[in-house]
Image 1 (cartoon, rainbow, N blue to C red):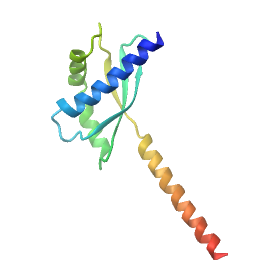
Image 2 (image 1 turned 120 degrees about the vertical axis):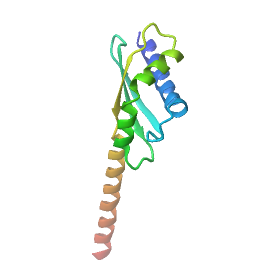
Image 3 (image 1 turned 135 degrees about the horizontal axis):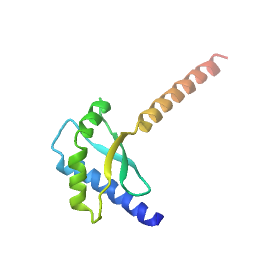
Image 4 (image 1 turned 30 degrees about the horizontal axis):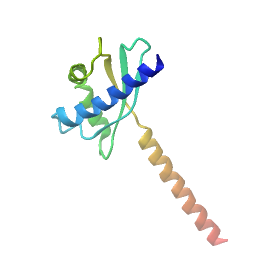
Length: 120
């Protein structure tokens, strides 16, 4: 049963990225990357975790994407051969920004430690 769920998740992920890149005509959305899809046990709801690579204002892009949930679900229904296509709920995934800020902080600390070592 888990294998079927994994297949559905992969199909939803791939198809949503295709729909966002090819069918949505809103330039305010930008480049959408689906990082994860979580399905309810009964496949009625799919939480789609998205991020916007290279976007200056990702929260504005996300707000525009949320407005298209209904269209994305109907486009997904045309592409997938499922009895009932799950309701799509977009969730903003900020893990990339958090990782980048953590990386930046670690680099600053490393440079500060090198300065201290050179001073000794």
